[in-house]
Image (cartoon, rainbow, N blue to C red; front, side, top):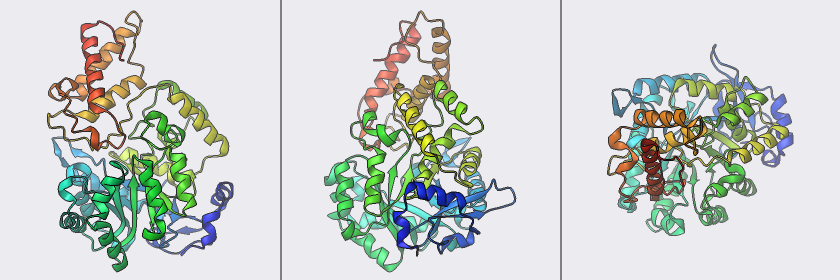
Length: 467
């Protein structure tokens, strides 16, 4: 296990250490040991690797975890069947990731319409069990899964679907939504947290943590109880926009700067989710893209976000939901190896984040927790199309503007191409079955009605102001 002095390393010292680290290991040996007192090691993978994958060490177990974690939430679907995962493509991406040093795979019973764990298990089944780490979750959101027997059944099903006899990283899924009352109902009153802790004692779970969204009281309470539960890690949403602006975006959110620093105080390593905010930090307004490109013309806009998340030394791994091979390849370029941001670059990104706050995009991360809609509405596609048009300058308030006709056409044509007519916002009746499941606390019916009103205005060519 790593020397405990590692945990107190300063960020400046960490950056210096990372720059001169020369130890290399193979993917198979990345699972154990500590290269001196550093938190970071590197691994050379494959003849076509871009460089050396950066690893972080789990201070509890000594696990060598790739700084890039494969998030299995946004797996590709077959083109001719949107209800069936493209297993062949998933296998190819996992093989490519594994070949290039990725060894952490994060899934959940709730992902991909309940099909992610099975797809993940199939893709990993060809590899030795001790050559990768799999993370899954107790996703007992529905009241029907709160009883002890139902939650235990979910856990057993995860083991079966993943084709494993132990879980490396087990999370209580999305705590904070619903406050302490819901947390107690999901995990305490039914005894399921006690059960999971006993599974850790037995070795069938190697690390226990939780993923956090929502009520900061829950986050603070669980950290205060660390001596009781001994959290091995905590998964938080962290990116350069949420670092200081999460609460400004939505008053129920918590700034990532606070979450990360509190974990550091409690000596708990962070797993990072939503480093790209569901793709929003790779699909930026044109002027923001130009700003980033001026600073680093050869780098993708996404690479800035991934470097930001990986720069902080108490981050164990950064999850990326990669749907296409090019997403994976770009992320490997960023993390093979990771070049941490300098202080000047961190300041530059915070200035960029402040500029981005001038663009009122809807904070949808395309997690699809709001789906399925009982009325067939494709909620994420509607919200993401609006954000895309806003970023591209295709939402113009002044109908007399020279750009209005072009923007109007781009929005309406793109809307029909992105969202089938029977799944568009005009079919929302405001039942609000979606909003309680949204980790970003979006008032989804309100946004759908607002977008529908905007679309009707465009169709009538009678103004384009969305209020």
